[in-house]
Length: 466
Image (cartoon, rainbow, N blue to C red; front, side):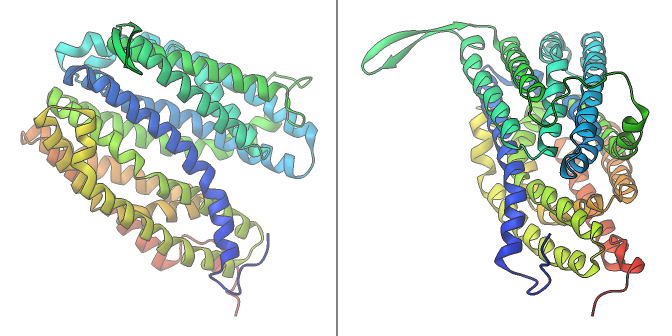
């Protein structure tokens, strides 16, 4: 890694940041675009359909974040072996990852299938849409093995420097999902093309059709990425042993477990949060679902920068370059806050129009617009938290982010939402107010950490360079 210390702010380091950030942004953008399309297409079926699809969204976050955390451990091991030219250890690690993928994918398949019937009850979904929610969840999560393969095998390929394949697989999944949505959600209907009326075929399966479209798309994507990994010229697991190997699983899980605990604890909080919101009725659930979908696109710049921050902080830490570490923070923090100010401002002004894309219900539009404008004001504060967390994860500090996130989620958002909605009878606006308070608390804790210098382990270990 080149020394970027002089000058601190130059086009070269900016180029490195953008080169690291854009693949994550593009991949998330594709995922968000399909989420927008799915929500809009299901939204034409009515408020109940939107609520049924969105009622278990947070369970998806819980599952996928847990799987992704496992990938973090293998990412470091494979990247180091690949960078050192040690093909044998890289292939061994990938073989172990294949075994882990089969175990985790099978386990989550069994769990999701078994709980699909009772999950809507646990999530306090409106009784009128529980059966529909259950059917959607069952079909959507039946192909958990290929979905796990997409996440974990994509991590392995990125560790070997191949970021294009995961993006191509994501594009394939998105394209198949969109096409099948048109064919499976709606019944056959006439379409005007070049002055001619053409009967467009459709299965008319509604919400279940949307789930089936996603399930098929994930299955194709899982097969595609497995084929590429198996035939990879460097990290193919062919010929390696798939039996558990402690020498590889040990160091991988040592990195993965703290990250997994943080993601699991936070995602479980999202599930509890959504459960309390679902108890407020289908209008609140639909507004919450749509607002979450809209908001997700405006976090893409923030999380793209977090990926770059983690990578560059890890490089500086490995080089024991304290000055570069401080220079990176001095560049990333204002850049991130600036991006989130622009993003939050855009969200504030376009909130009503975007919510209207997904629903024609006036009550849903009004409620969704209100909560989006609230959270838009807190995005710059959240941006600071995102970037400092990225810097800390890059140097291997998972303890403080874990404590901060768990305290904010459970101590503020969950307790506050329970008091407001379940005890005081308040609605969705109060619940999202607790979410904003959570974001502000994270900002305060990370700000204290930054001011004290405890985010940077080199600050005390190595004297600052003059």
